[in-house]
Length: 556
Image (cartoon, rainbow, N blue to C red):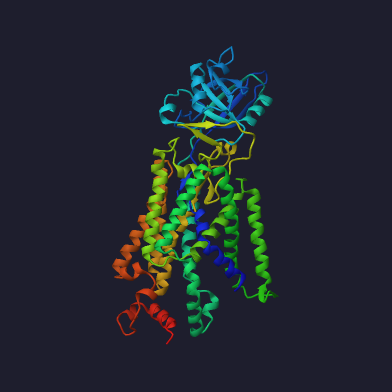
């Protein structure tokens, strides 16, 4: 068995590990929680600098323009945490924009002290990553002042450049709801599903070149191997349980498990990229030099290809937090992973597809819409994990409040590498706060894609006209467009499967009923359905491909 085949089988037989990479099933855009602190000096030569701030728009929205914004005198209290009134200096903080350190009390407790001493706004300097302030709804509704996070390094830079007499303005320029990055994500998703599903129905060139007898033996010999690649109803349930367990674990132990996911993605994407590219390289009739190794003949060009794939993934690992350009390589690896998954993992029948899609639809809706009802900060577990701000990231909960811990300087918060990311085309906030992205979870490509791939293989085995494949691909595209429309209108995270699952399942069901093929489509493989197939029956004309397959598998 060749190296490429070994890699493919190893990936699929470890499908429970691959399930970890599918836990992010919600499509959403990075929420507009970024703002700008415009600071100016009151000294003889006025200077102006702008800095990124992160705020929670549900607490106290910031003005959208400088015209509507209020100018405050900034008072630096970064020597304190403002956890109680004793931290307030003797001269007071009345009518000031106060800057304090992030510490061992909640943002709300700091804000209460600031409000009680008549401050006009509160900035919390952080030495770690910046995340939107969180807390109980019943508590933050009582706040009457803006509260935001700012990097402590920016405070030091501000004082160095502007001196001690600083006035500042807080505002947040609006981000457009519609962005061309959505179209890029759409074409990546639909293209990946269509290509991976079509590839799933293509026989290997080597098997096509064999005689009918040899091809029949090869097909029968590979059935046992393909059993490990099939998601039966039982394995579907096990698959969904793994996904649920992993997202809950990531919510509580994010800062540790995120590196496990990164490691798994690195290995899986290396293998997937190799399998995708090797399928193209093997079709090139040149440079077929090879050598013997342990009684196996290995092509030199495949060894070079393997080293190339390892190098690309190594580059991604090193520069994974560089948002300026690494997203291109990340998306290429993600597309390769999805393509390889759709090519190798097979759904045996429509019944398994329905069970998988419906269960993951329930999972998706539950973790996006229901979990905010009982999480401490009333945030969705799905979105918390997706944005890297779960309860185990850099915070901990005590009672019903979200506690902020004083931590040493640390690198920016790691993100799960299980999404397609495309930078949004936005104004100056992106330059200050980093690049916002439109993202789509791998699960929103692979889970409906498994149904599309099944339709492709069903077409190949029965009619050969790609009727189900084309219609299901169109239904996926419609469901994705509907997802984006709702996302833009509601301006909040959306579980994409809520729209993708009904569109694809309804389309496939109506097509099967219209063609009077629902029974064979539901039970799947012609090897199971057409036992005792009679070549003289009326089914001969309707399922010519099925007839040929049964002949190939008939030992007589």
